[in-house]
Image (cartoon, rainbow, N blue to C red; front, top):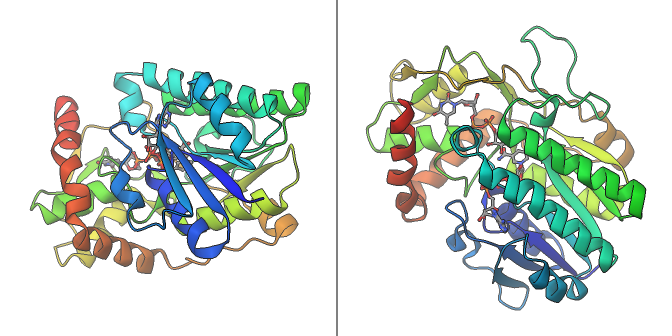
Length: 332
Ligand code: NAD
Ligand code: TDX
């Protein structure tokens, strides 16, 4: 392998992966990104131009893929519409990118016989009760709740079918909630950090007892690289770092880290169909491929993330007003 096509490489997790690839390997990256509201070229700033090439374009553009795919050794597919709240107001772009876009990409990967890694989410499995001793595994039945997660589930199933029917050389990973640098301010953790910086009280949906299983974006990147290099074709791997926290605790931690009273937040209207709990059992990835997360201290990772948003206001400031305007329409 020499050159990896990273779709969605100007987004949160994709850009973290590109930085990781350039820092930790000799591989080169070609980034294909449409630069939707969620894409930001500034997230790729400082990367060496002889190792990283950027191309603006749509993954659903088959002509563009005919040009790109023969030039790369593998595709790592991050591009997606990724925000649940947006999917409740306007599901169409989720169908276009997550389903039609993924379909177009795997057809191109099949045509040019290119190794393909599909990035997905634990949300395809639906949610768990708070006291359920089980966590999601690779054999948990699919049961997605939102337009976002149902289109991600559909994209996973397309990849599985292309493996079985056409011999596509593909792997799939389903990861839990990521945090870290370069995350759009519409998402929970950056939204609350930047609210506090703007002297606006953080906003907790409902009672805030919903649990998310947090993993640092760098750990997601190391897992994806491990699967790309050593994963078995046709297999699915769950990625998680044993980071379960409820939303209330996360908001209180952010406030404490930022020197504010832990109760200085507001409860707002809940998300319709809000998944209660996600939790990942990543035994297969750890046992079969020997992967281990490095960021096991969530509080330390959160402190570093707060510091990153403090240090990088020019990166996030241009997104903030538009993100908050969307939330104002729903009272969130
Ligand atoms: P993001 O919204 O920050 O980034 C998505 C990127 O894809 C943006 O740069 C956007 O411009 C680009 N994009 C959107 N539509 C496109 C199209 N049609 N063609 C080309 N580029 C397009 O998302 P993220 O949080 O970085 O998520 C990346 C991937 O990881 C997604 O597939 C998501 O489902 C998955 N995932 C995310 C999380 C999480 O916690 N954020 C967890 C597990 C899995
Ligand atoms: O202001 C808020 N207040 C709040 O309480 C926001 C934006 C969110 N929340 C809650 C909703 C969720 O329980 O915080 C939790 C996390 O919310 P999001 O950041 O929107 O993430 P989530 O819906 O859990 O989905 C994320 O993880 C899985 C990513 O956005 C997905 O792309 C990924 O697949």
